[in-house]
Image (tube, rainbow, N blue to C red; front, side):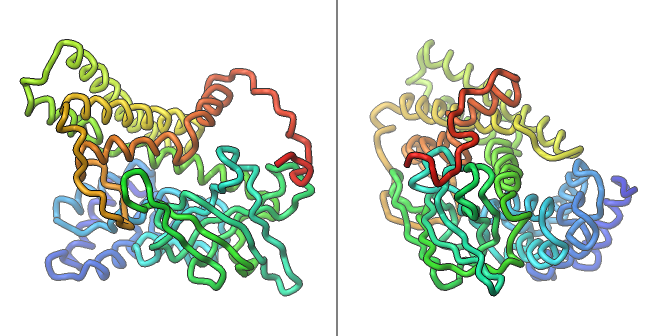
Amino acid sequence: MTDADDLRARTRALLADRPPATTSRADFLAARFDAGLAWVHYPEGLGGLGAARSLQSVVDAELAAAGAPDNDPRRIGIGLGMAAPTILAYGTEEQKRRFLRPLWLGEEVWCQLFSEPGAGSDLAALSTRAVLGDDGVWTVTGQKVWTSSAHLARWAILIARTDPAQPKHRGITYFLCDMTDPGVEVRPLRQITGEAEFNEVFLTDVRIPDAHRLGEVGDGWQVARTTLMNERVSIGGSTGGRESGMIAPLARTWREHPERRTHALHQRLITLWVEAEVARLTGERLRQQLAVGQPGPEGSGLKLSFARLNQQISGLEVELLGDEGLLYDDWTMRRPELVDFTGRGPGYRYLRSKGNSIEGGTSEVLLNIVAERVLGLPTEPRTDKDVAWKDLAR
């Protein structure tokens, strides 16, 4: 078994062989992946060593101390946090070897083609169709929405309906879609922030070979649940230290403006600071649980807390700043590569946090998941459980 001492020795050998000061970023990252130090819990040959997930911090600490480059995880977060664990869980050996290395190296950016304008928060009601031809190629037609990084992505994880005669959860199949293929059109969606980090994606007779299907035909909902559980941990599970994330600029504003303090604002600040710290520690505990298995429904509770806290914290920051809080730094239309909550002004944080209760599963849906799968409460009555998707009212 690979232990911490072995990982330190392997990391130091990598640093000696590829000194960060004299090695290009691309070459260093490639050597790190091939040495099994990319994600140590992945299998050998796929960037890992089959070690305990908790040992990744040993490698990361050695590399950080040496000033080694990282793979810009915020830019490729969808690939790292959603596509990779799903491919690892359901992909063929050929798919794992084809996609995981360029994904981790950041050579190929990924996006997620799940949400649809006609399905709302009921993801399983999606209507994008995939039809298998005699040549073994699927033809996909439909529309997706709220797609982060679609304007940058080479690949997408995609779910589509392959059997409308089945109930909505059982007639879905999961695919890996080449975003450069004919028939894929990406249009920006300008948001309340002025930017267009999201997109809508139109799929018109897009051809996807069956070799790019992930999991069995009709088993797409089960595959997608793996993606969604990882997504919620990825969104809600901050990896920063104490007073990191959205609480940091609020605490800084409080310290810089003593003249605006009141007892009531102080009580709200303390409450939010404590809740943010509880959420941070809960996220750390959840990441430790990941070391011994796949993420469970607890990630939904973490993401739910993340959305509520972000909105309350940013609201208090704007209120504390008074008239100054009504100013907005820049309405320029951009298509950014990542979301930067702390790199912009308070107005941006306030507006952008509104989307936190929608992305990665709406807060209403997550409340149901927590109630039913974490607390064990009775499920809500469903009249569409055994009804064919084609017979549902739309």
